[in-house]
Image 1 (cartoon, rainbow, N blue to C red):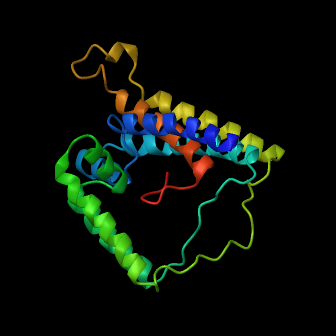
Image 2 (cartoon, rainbow, N blue to C red):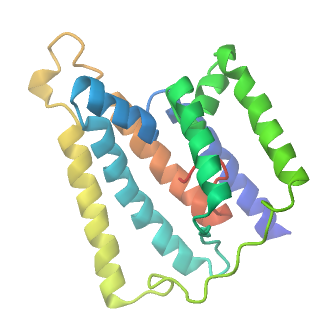
Length: 215
């Protein structure tokens, strides 16, 4: 009981931090690809890559400390999965964002995305009706090589932490550039992305992956 209370007290502030930072930053790969194609700028993609390194640096040590932590499962690539991915891709193209960014915009007060909630409920309803899709995922026959701490895994976590920090530092504008119009807040979205990844990675280690999109 005490552990459950502690989990709630830790998770609620982290969820609030993720929601607040989502209004400034983004972990949407769709938006990152759009920026790369339209503006020829990979900054958002690099920010996601850097923060993914931070997630690994956070979740792996927490998985060592929490032996009952949940690992993400893998689904076989078959026709239902491909059909679902195609429909998801069409929705992402229409919304110009993934499921996470769509929910973020809805939480920010943009009611034009309200239909996404109805679509999510409808999809879950179809999943419950079509038992062929609701099959059990077989347990993996081997554990992750990072499941237990080893000297090389400690070095890997340290290297990921250094790499993530170095990439984030490159994304932060230099003090001399802050005087230019519009440059003063240039680093804010990427700092917010880092906050999302670190807080979201901690939630992942505590509760497992989100159902809408990988952390």
